[in-house]
Amino acid sequence: MSAPSEQTVCRRLAGRTAVVTGAGSGIGLAAARRLASEGARVVCGDIDQERGRAAAEETGGLFVRTDVTDPEQVEALFRAAYDTCGSVDVAFNNAGISPPDDDSILETGLEAWRRVQEVNLTSVYLCCKAALPYMRRQGKGSIINTASFVARMGAATSQISYTASKGGVLALSRELGVQFAREGIRVNALCPGPVNTPLLQELFAKDPERAARRLVHIPAGRFAEAEEIAAAVAFLASDDSSFVNATDFLVDGGISGAYVTPL
Ligand SMILES: NC(=O)c1ccc[n+]([C@@H]2O[C@H](COP(=O)([O-])OP(=O)(O)OC[C@H]3O[C@@H](n4cnc5c(N)ncnc54)[C@H](O)[C@@H]3O)[C@@H](O)[C@H]2O)c1
Image (cartoon, rainbow, N blue to C red; front, side):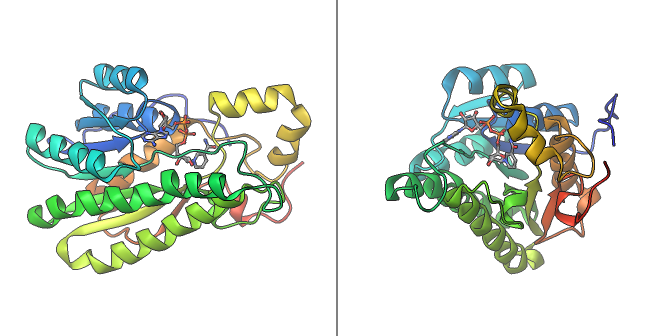
């Protein structure tokens, strides 16, 4: 399975406003670019001022410096989107961390556990809580919360709080998708497989054996590109996915379906 060589241009999001958290890097940045290319006005939230601002400038959008663990800052992010653009149609709640001190349960301390839960799970609760009132008033909206394939599969290379936080994102998204379906609001969890980000490249360039240990489980034989995850975000954001709701939307190259992979 090879990566797509050229991107299809479509304008499924013309006139819509999309809030993207963690827009300064990786999946969030690729999604901000893709959503903008499909016609959305993008509102970039990130704790990193420099990168978040650069993402907004590149996509012709708005930057709001936001720590997604802070309820007031999250409310201000969605308020700024509504006040500036007049609607909140898409919320891509994506910011997350995967720090090295979140490891095996035998090693991971309570402070690291709590920090990861705050950034990866409490933030999604806060962003959904802030986005929903706008979407309910409009009678429509699409919320996409970034989980991970590790919410569906166990890894012997554990990051215990990360995995638990992503499991929480799945359950929260499913419940909200069911609760608000008749108000025209869809809520899906997005479950990417491992993505070819600078972080992952650096980690595995230093240690090819670690990369090989993971690649052997991927039927596609490679990691995802951030643009391939962004394509799924654009689909879930658009009306093309109008009957996709309350799912664990896997974009994992087949990892979670695999027993034996090709040599
Ligand atoms: N990269 C992967 O292989 C992979 C796989 C599955 C899921 N994910 C998930 O995808 C999401 C994005 O991951 P990525 O690889 O693009 O990461 P990344 O580190 O490249 O980008 C994350 C962004 O979030 C921002 N951020 C961090 N803490 C924040 C906070 N408190 N408030 C606001 N912004 C904050 C960072 O500044 C950064 O711009 C995360 O939720 C991650 O868990 C990643």
